[in-house]
Length: 307
Image 1 (cartoon, rainbow, N blue to C red):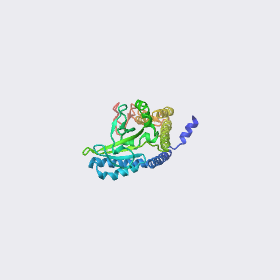
Image 2 (tube, rainbow, N blue to C red):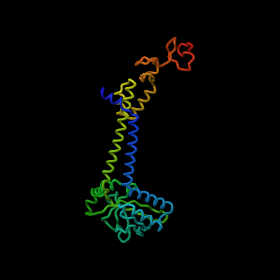
Image 3 (tube, helix red, strand yellow):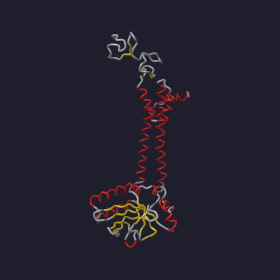
C-alpha cells in the first residue's frame, strides 16, 4: 500500500488529464470518421430519403419526382426497387425495373395468419414487412443477420402449414393524400461485410475510454483525500463505486469544511487550530475563544469588543 501511495503521489493528474482528453478526442474523431465513411452509402440514402419526404409533404407526388426516386434507388445497394403507384395500385414507374409486381400491379394485404406481414395478392411467395424509415435505412437486419426477418417468418405457423418458398422484403411508403399516388421503397435484406466487427471495435474503444475516465477520477479523489489527511481508501472506493455521485459528495464535504493553508489538512470550520500541524486557522475572541470573522466588531457569543 505504501508503494501504491508513493506512485499516486508522483502522478501529475493535471498532465494525465490533458493527455487523456486529447487522446479521447482523437480516438472519438477517428471513430466518427471511420463510421461515417463505412456507412456513407446509408448516410447519403438517409439525406435523399428525407428530401423526397419533404417534397411529397410540400408538393405531393407527380411525374417530376421520378429523377429523385432514381437517385434514391441508386444511393443504396440494399434497395430492390422504388415504385410509383397510382390510386388503383397500378405501377406507373419502376426506378430499377425489377420483377416486383406482376402485371404492373402491386396490391398488398395483411396476411390472414400473420398480421405482421403483407402479402402480394398476385404473387403468393413474396411478402413484405412494413418498417419505419430509420429501420429501413439502418436496420439491425441489414447489419448483423441478413436472414433474421426470413427466420422470423419461418417460425410462424402460417408459413409452416401453407408455404414452402417465399421472399421477404422490407417496405416503407410515402402517400400523397390529394391524388392517392404512392411511393413504395422496397429494400432487400443484405449483409454488410465487417459491419458487426466495426461496431464491436468502436464499442470496445468507447468502453476503454469510459473505463479510464472512471478509474482516473477515483485515483484523483484518492490522492486528494490523502493529502488532506482523510481516509483516502474510503473516499477512493466510494468514487470508484458511484463515480460522479461520489465525487459530488466528496466536493460537498470539502466545501463544508476548511483547509489548513499550511499543511493542506481538511479541518472543521469550528476549529481554531489545525489538528495536524497546530497552525491557527481561524480568528477567535480573546475573552471566550469564540470564532469570529474579519468584519466582526463584537463577539457574537460574549459581546467583547474585538481589536
